[in-house]
Every structure is written in structure tokens, then in C-alpha cells.
Image 1 (cartoon, one colour):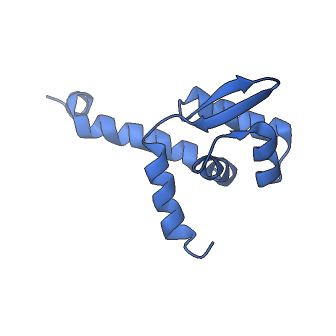
Image 2: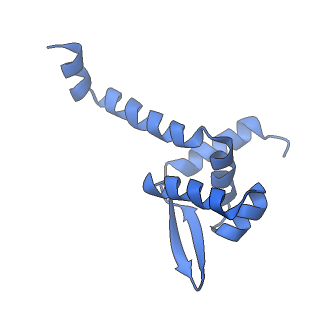
Image 3: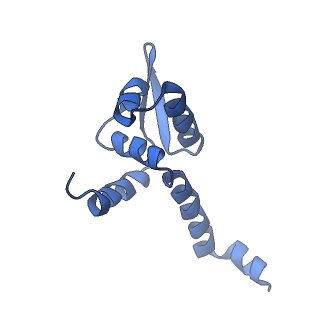
Amino acid sequence: MTLTELSEIDPMDAAAREAAEVMKALSNPARLRLLCALVPQERTVGELEQLLGASQAYVSGQLKRLRSEGIVACAVAGRERVYRLEDPRIRPILERLYEVFCPDL
């Protein structure tokens, strides 16, 4: 059996690939701040714009990417979109990153 064939059936390889994809999504500082803002509560695009100090277009673009990866989800409330963390694996990762990198904030 070749290495390629072994990697195709190795569950650790599949898990590593999936983890790497999640880490790619978290690797952008603005996306990471956006996700951290969603840990305590759901937020509207406007609230996220203010917290990040970024334009609506930029925030919406980042949210679109995170939504396409299943990391966040949104609900429509009147004229606003309210975003929340969707993937249950993300919250503990963000909480741990906060503990390690932001202990004094």
C-alpha cells in the first residue's frame, strides 16, 4: 500500500486536514477578532463593524467566508442580520486562545 493510499484511510490524517482548514479561517487577525466578539453573544453586522473598526463591506465579506465554512450562521431580525458561532468546536478554541494570548484584557 502506498503512502497516498494510507493517508486516504488514516483517520488522523483526515482530522489533521480538517483542523488545518479551521486554523486557516482563524489565521486572519480581523476574522479572529470577529469570532472572539461572537463568543459571549450574538451580534449584528453593525455591532461587529464598531467592535472591529472596519467597514460594512469588509465585515460582511469576512462573515460570508466564515458562513461558507460553517463557522458562523446568521438569522434575519427585521432589517438586520444577527450572527452567532455555529460550529461548536470553535468556541473552546477561541476561549483557550483568549486565555493564552489575552490574559490581562
